[in-house]
Length: 120
Image (cartoon, rainbow, N blue to C red; front, side, top):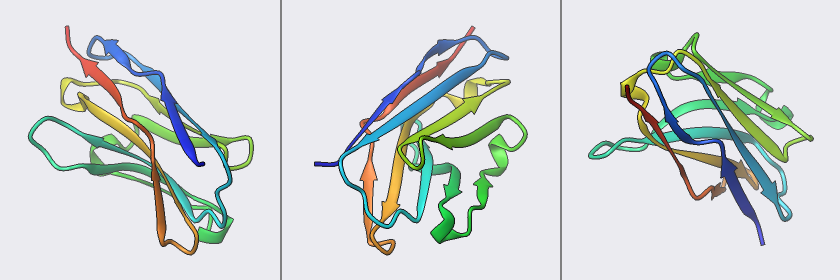
């Protein structure tokens, strides 16, 4: 059974930093990309950052709102995903979700979500 487990969320003051982690267990075949999404109350779930596997060309992509502040990375092959968040602002407050896109881009695995709150 595939499971994605997130950690690192919490409360931080404006200008602060957080590092989110997502660890995958179980067998995931033919990974195309891994990504972080976020959803604020009353808003849609939006892509924050994506990192492609070699199958997907190995590139990264960032939403305009986080460029220069957030960095997505991976470790342990494709088993661990990170999001380093710097210069956090109140508008970054949301539930953050990790995602694996696999099996010829037909399957999406989601983490449970972790709350990030930016407030003074």
